[in-house]
Figure 1 (spheres, one colour):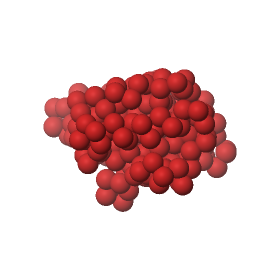
Figure 2 (cartoon, one colour; figure 1 turned 135 degrees about the vertical axis):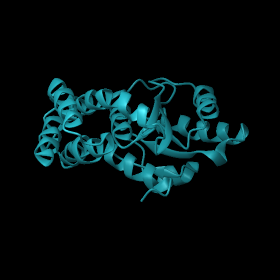
Figure 3 (cartoon, helix red, strand yellow; figure 1 turned 45 degrees about the vertical axis):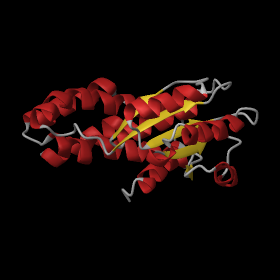
Length: 216
């Protein structure tokens, strides 16, 4: 019975059914399932399926966004229980993400935020056109271990280098792993500017973030 509920829950996330996800999460709690089991065996696998399909070109941005919303609606139902039990309060890591100054491309960066959240990260999304000093201030404020810098234009990718230099100047470069991404950005560029990792899509960003934090 509980396995049926969890597989139905996975399917609602895959299909982006926001209200059904919340309803099934409530049913799973009523059936006596542990909140963490509901996340690990119900909600998160759905997000993984959609992420994989997106990487293969079988699913598209709206699917990923809806799946993210469905997962979040289930998580909201679980939050009070998680807090009561003292579970789920410690994220696997803290990430600051944003699109660099001069660049207003939103979608890729937002998908990374959705996927990182789905994988247990606490995410601070600074939005688009983010000044260098804002990234540095947020890393200091949150103690983030991951900083994701998105740039979709050849004219703005140089700002990624400036952010890394500013982190060094502020003496916080050692505490944070910098991930770069965006259409014109490649592994060679990441190495040239001294970034710690590079990803060309949202799933790759999660894998890199986990690798950099030694989470496998």
